[in-house]
Image 1: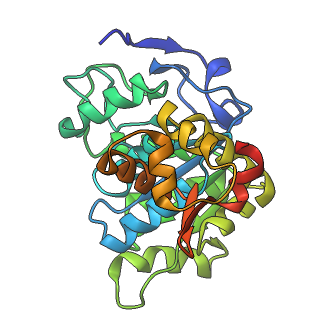
Image 2: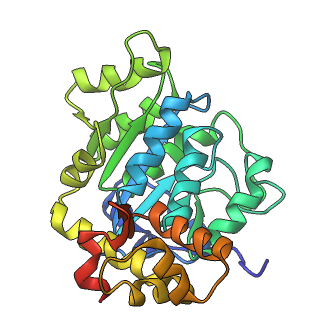
Length: 297
């Protein structure tokens, strides 16, 4: 891959990291660092996440679609990789800070080299305070946790035990006077103990996408508009054709006839637009969803 490792100085560090004390006098980067007018959100959690943790992570990050938010995480198993994957899926830039050097041969964990490549191809970046050939080990991870906490406006904790690197990241965030958000979970789950501990200490509880949007300082109306623009920009030519035809509600049979496709092809296209929430079928007719009608026509 043509993403060479570059050396950057403190004045070029991303996000709020430039304003932190006691940091390396140089760092290493592959790919493109997002502009610093974006809001950086560090998302961390256990490597042994539950299904609940996975769904929460996906729900919260997907709620930020269309907003100027960069997802920062550590490329590790569990919540870290889910955060990166979800950011890629919903068109958000993401920065991975592995606990190793950035050479493909040393990226930790090795199983996530492909994920690292996809982050780079999507216009994101890999960042590390370590020389390219440094292997991940016990002393590298606390140092990278400090980097992740320092570069972000806030750190979001999704599932963690009380004694973990995740809570070290949250501690660094507090030391840097950053916000700490935590997702509550079941009282019988050991990986909810960390977030509950943070909430008792004053972390902001996050129970849904609107909570996260508000905690980051966005107006919900701006989020809806940004998500709308993002969805519309991704419509295929065939999907736009359906929208153009639906200038008024009509029966499915009429829509299929106007599309000039086979019933199977038209039904698949209609189903896809229904899944995206752009059209809806009720009382025997297909119509544009109200929130899209004015923008699409």
